[in-house]
Image 1: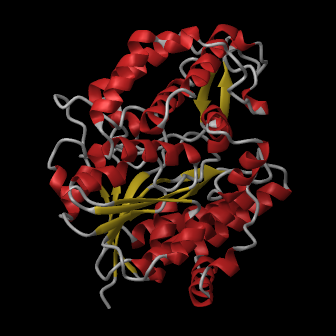
Image 2 (image 1 turned 180 degrees about the vertical axis):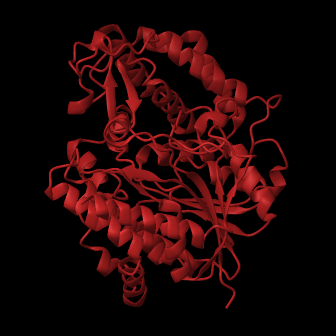
Length: 468
């Protein structure tokens, strides 16, 4: 079947030639900018470490490039709201759609804080930092673990965590929610776990066996050190002497903000046509990352149970091997749009060749997981529907900016950037430019072992809704 892989490579080369005048290496971009890294020292944005997001400086760069200073933008995969809050700061109205409760909670807390009395919040934080009231509470079982989080904390930490939650019952309103959010922000630091893409890695001190090589995450912060550090960080960002975007600079210019909780596959069809001036987004990559596992501690804190987790995993955009077909999709989208999206998906020859190759790899038992072909197929079909919906709700000449990575499975590089750009043209977009990061990313160790190392592109696509 090597000839099929060669055919895919020929297809990819032909597509690159077709989009050659659109693929531009942008020396101003780097991996720090298109990831969470550049947010680490940004007041407000630094509170919760959401590694799957992009940075506030990147959004500012994109808005400058677009010269977009008024109107209404949408992020259908809002994450923790970086695009929304950065746009709001510049006077734009912003709407975000997010399914993962961790992202929804982060955005809700930031919005709540921006609309609350900062003196009251600072007083509550000061009280908790100086009095540390959780030390006087009787610990009960307040943190309800999921199966995959059981034993995640040292015993002393678990007791302190439960005491903190028990003490929170004496607080109310914005202060209570902010104090719980501070706890959510430190769960990884005080646990035996570390987020690692497809799953949680467990430190050897937890007693869990995971893989042949013991994992040492380094220092596990004591509860008091972690929570006091986080509360101090939040307090410093809430001081008028600081600079928290959206709080103290040009508040009269601040745009409206709306957060829609749920799947964009279900919410997009409910939005009005020709109602947005731009889309800035980064969907989950087709890299098998399972947010329901990596954010399991945070989801447990937010009250999700085993059934909730399973349902959430299936509702998210298909990017894990456990995702099944969403059979309800034909009933959610308008029949004409659904038919057009299906035709664009079926007619994308390069993608269909890749899907046939992956099916052959699965049948020959050459893939490390038989769910990969289904995941790739559903990923692209669901994103095709998203792209067609974005074309419907955007005004003529409005931009859509998407940040995404190419991937590699079974030795085949999947040019996500070019496939989606081709589909976007069928949906009614013009491809303005595909910015390529100067350095891409390598493939997995399994891929390198079987097929050698080959860099895959990290890109930002800029499309515009056709005027006619």
